[in-house]
Image (cartoon, rainbow over all chains, first blue to last red; front, side, top):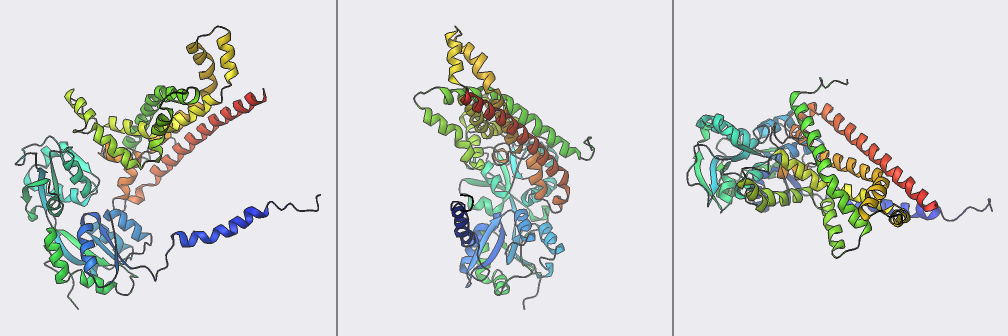
Length: 256
Length: 236
């Protein structure tokens, strides 16, 4: 009996051999068939998708927080253009050789508003029961909002009442759900929500410029330069203006 | 390296918050978890399949969905949130919310483990106790519970560990407020959100791995005792 090998162990081996080729086609994509890809901050996703749809080339848009995107790009994610409002992450990627800051293009500017729900207060309270904005420790919205509140002279009294949100979207959500009485939001986010009312526009001098910065990434594929240029086109500016952005005034680079 | 001197104050704060809330979760889940596990193991009743499904739901739902559900219940405009607000208490975005989120996510693991342990108790032993004049509760307390104890403890440890690592439901329901609701996983997340923050992650990741490792090891030792009890029971 010992001379006859049992036939059974062959079946698992056969199954393994059949299974292995399934892995590749299941999830992987080759670089050639992939469209040009824009990685953009979540607060700009809607308008960037609109602009991408106008572009002559096929474009895929991936939206997440600037930090998540930067970490992905750092780890070699196949992105061609990075759009963020956080200069720190642009600098972070520049330090790691993933982009050239000289090629950054300011697509537009955003500003801040104090907003409430339609059934909420009609003017900004002296001291809200609770207010929301991005977490000033790391969320760009919160960093700008803290600067503006300091200029308004309210940061010291208000900061105790802060409900910090993980991103600009979450701050809108806290306000919509009544968890916060008022919120400091991007003007574009407040305009996009019909249930919200803008109580006060905060002057742009009160915070660092909120610039929508688009930068092509090192190693981007052919067509990325044209797409990057398209992001500054008349069509793109019109869409940005309709969403509530102020069009980019000072391009960081001369048009070729 | 036993001292915590290599940690920054915010890290110690997060570690203490995580540990205390996870202990609270384990203590809070133990009585109802054991009761439900025993019901599922030993009783047949109307709606048992429904209870079984409900209990397991948090295991398979996206944690963010669980967090939103809890926020809808306990938020300022939720039914339970309004009730607690009428007594002057907020639940959402407080440490209590961390405990509720951790308990919701952790209790299925406790119930699964304790249920297996109760099922492995030899019914003959329970019948013998009854025939010797013990009442149903006394039988449960003196026979079923002690025999199921290793499995229950394994479940408690798993529940504790799950609460310690809980992220999605916590950030949605308890927020990420420094010094208030920023637990260890939320601090790690926050560091990753900051340029250069990854350089400070080493000690935090080491602690997380160490705690999880010890918890899983303890839980496995408990489960092993259950299995041994089961095979011995089968041989008898």
